[in-house]
Image 1 (cartoon, rainbow, N blue to C red):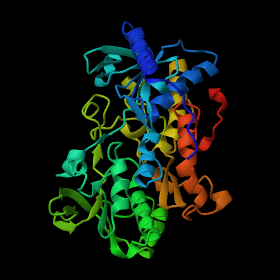
Image 2: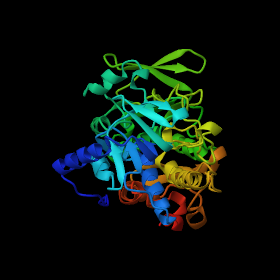
Image 3: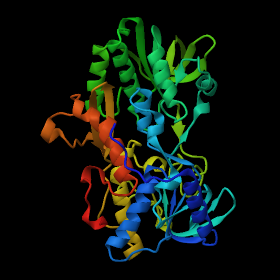
Image 4: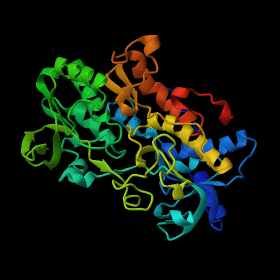
Length: 447
């Protein structure tokens, strides 16, 4: 893997910096821009909005942009699939959160408890009230590990054969279990509904299949894909190609089957079908994708839609309620009807930034619109990848088709994008607000 560019800062220095930043803001309770969440979307937008004002000749003061997040670490979550496939250590894909903030962006190590949009303020879990001129919500979503009976206990049991790439704590167990299996039934699951990167549940399945073929175990291991979805993928073009690949490789699939419970003692998994009946399956190894949904502190808040997502216009990323016109959202916590991926954020962030800047500067949104672009780099084996790119309406929007041809074709170049290029770009450009997805690395209005 290419080395990731990063700021080098020791543990003591990180602690000193974090405490100094917290202390420096402890008496300031009003900010120009408040960003909730220091994940991919939050860090990107915090940097981009500061740079946008500077480029316009209207620089913000240091500390005018604040990010609220109590996490100790920031994670490059697409890397968890790589770790699960034995392509890197999980520690390669995290950085101390405090080390990612430039001096002009304030970091308060607290989480939001409640939103009060009518007074342009939030309260934190410690009871602190913080006010803002503009709010950006980039808080992510909730992974419901308890949504499957027996799953937390199975993940904690090193001998269970159950693992998941959907957390830092468990992604290395995936590779341990996959590499250790010599024979038996391997089941890979996907729930119905919204999840992060809906292609990831089968990415790790394809990598396991290839590992078993290359190590001579393919004839001894039966692989099943059990999914709550009605097809292999939401975009028909890629779904058809993936289903043909599944048949070619001898992988069985059961569609509209949701995992509801795990019995580790008897190595049985119970699935609920769309007609309400259940079916049990024996397993030796099982990779589980847990159900996901909106975060509790957003669900039921004034800024959320009935489903619990921050309700924003799908083109401008501004809140749909006129009285909340100083609120924006992007990424996993938003109501945007597109896949929840880092790739989507690369296109959402510049649009949100431009509209937020325009609203703060003129009171109106700009002409910038988001077309729903997202991408799913579908690992299909070691040395090959199908690069799915699409926009609203599940319409393909391929960046390389004019140069390389149809992107349903699996390519080694795309594999190295996923394994080597994308992590480097993320750490060296994206979290600093200097990467703009399909628009390319250079945007004159931001420099």
